[in-house]
Image (cartoon, rainbow, N blue to C red; front, top):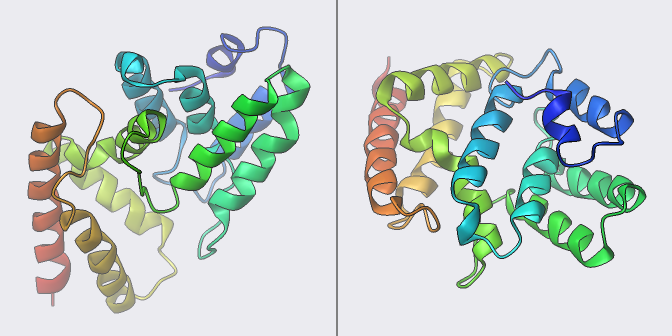
Length: 203
């Protein structure tokens, strides 16, 4: 799990902003979008940092991309980007990197990565890495998402979730940066098809 010490490896002198981010990622309504999810993302980014043009910007974008996470709202990524813009300059982050972090945070709203966007490709791959996980881990992820949206009626959840997953399944190249992207995409497609079948086939 991610801790304040992980943040302080980036900004040794800061504790306030890092502590605030830890609190945000630990909010009780979160079941999947937690510090564990952030840890997985940072692990993917660290392992494949060489494929990005600005690995630090990608790491910072991971920290901020779900810093604001409220259920049933459409502007979490925008508000998270604004949060990054508001605090990073005070940590000495140059304006061009701050702008890149904000762009990357906004990109996670739909994971639309333009050709040649190496930073965006790595961040998107890290954010979606759970889709390519072993089936038992994927099942835990799917269950955690359902817990986050426990207030949504079952029929509505199944239909909405299946629609979202269908957009990922329709992507022939779901992963774009990691060296094993073809294998990751194949595993993700298997997981997605299985969950969609369960969602639409359940009574």
